[in-house]
Image (cartoon, rainbow over all chains, first blue to last red; front, side, top):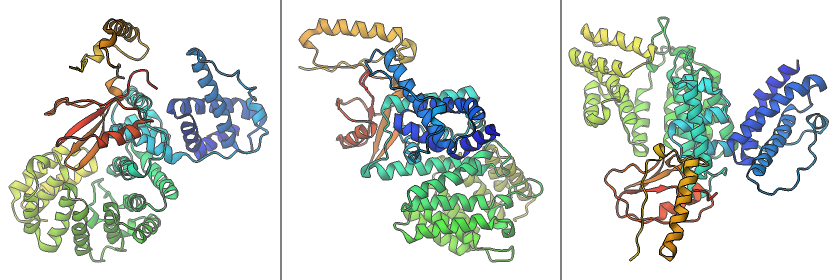
Amino acid sequence: MSQENLESTVRAAGRRVVAALAARYRNLDIAEDAFAEACLRATEAWPMKGTPADGAAWLYRVADRAALDTLRRRRTRERIELDPPEPVPTAEDLMIEAGIPIPDERLRLIFVCCHPALGPEARVALTLRTVCRLSTEEIARAFLVSEATMAQRLVRAKQKIADAGIPFEIPGKDAWAERLESVLSTLEVTYGSAHADAALAGPHAGFAAEILDLTRVLVEILPLETEALALAALVRYAEARRPARLDEGGAMVPLAEQDPCKWDRALIQAAEAYLQRAADLRPTGSRSLLAAIHCAWSARQKNTDPLPWSTILKLYDAMLSLRDDAIVRVNRAVALAEVAGPDAALHELEALDKVEMESFAPYHAVRADLLARVGHGVEATAAYDRVLSLTEQPAERLWLERRRAAAMAGGSR
Amino acid sequence: MKYALLIYQDESQAALDEGSPALKAIVARHMAFSRELGPKRLGGSGLKSTRSATTLRTIGKDKTVHDGPFAETREQLGGFYLIEAADLDAALAIAKEVPLAGNGAIEIRPLLGAD
């Protein structure tokens, strides 16, 4: 029974306790080790003395003592004079103390883990490990590396934080925009890897739920940041589609062909609430516009409802003024093809930098489809070959192979 | 004349991790060398490993922060500042103000044993 109590306490409050310890000691390793020590002591103390009334506070208090002990030992080793240790209450003594508030330091920790002085991959791994508390093994599987390699990467990232002097502070006004952007893009990349795994059967299974939770926490702490609100909306819109993203054969179903009846309406509602809050604030960022695009799609209730292409095109036009890059251009071309025809869209794609597009799969996928639609079967087939060489996801590959076969047979759609 | 002597060495081969015997040995040799130089030595310090490095890149008006040391492309070392800053963010804030003629990069490396 107390084992179950410990597990549920760790699940519910572990992140908050570790974040509070990390912020207090400005060191991720000390926080992790102290928390592990507290959990170990709980497995001994709780069955004997009964589960404490406030398990989280107990863990925090015991871990805090353990962290202090570690620091004392280190300083003694380095022969720095310290006051003699205070009498330390035993873990059992703490059982009777009333709950102590645990400071909410998760935001600080997110800013540390997503600091731009860490490599983008290190940021994602460190956030998943430290903020979301996924195991090193889970993260390693998602990155397709061995557990030892991932452990090494995490050690390096933590070392960099300590050596370079990355502060455990919420950034000031000057650095705020850049640092928040780094946090949001890290969460985006993390969610992106979960989203790419359409069946959610792969190693990213734990991520999607974590990012839903983390974005909820983020907007709780930063209720006035439009881009944070928009990101919370975005991941919910994307997650709402999951039940409709694969057909019976396991192939990907593109958005326009998905059955809106299968979308998760509760998640869409949650997304809309966040988007509304973002819209009530200023300024509108590119994520808000992207969320508005998702919102336009989500207005469809059933298969027979019209496709919102002209709205989508207008939103992408607006997006170009905020963010003019290949992703936006290629997505805009998809909408343009529906509104103005495939020739106009192909013309737009021609304007993109060929070298830059070489290994950008969405470009080749859209181009292949457009070429097939204007009757250039051979070129379309070659473009599909190019996308397939760049795509690993089985669901996407299945869909692309079908389209390739159709293009080869000379069928346009 | 005043000169800067910039020391380049292969840190992976030399096994100069903090606290390693190799590092202790080289630090001892530098101390001896500094004593020998006497008043001719105006300043200087060891740097932590490049794993602790952060690079601030400037392209046009964009200044972006990257993990890792400066990777030599077209630019050459043109000078250096030794600064005191509370943490990496404070150091980056100062680095952003360093004048540059056109595009370039500033590598931010903590000094050895200066925590």
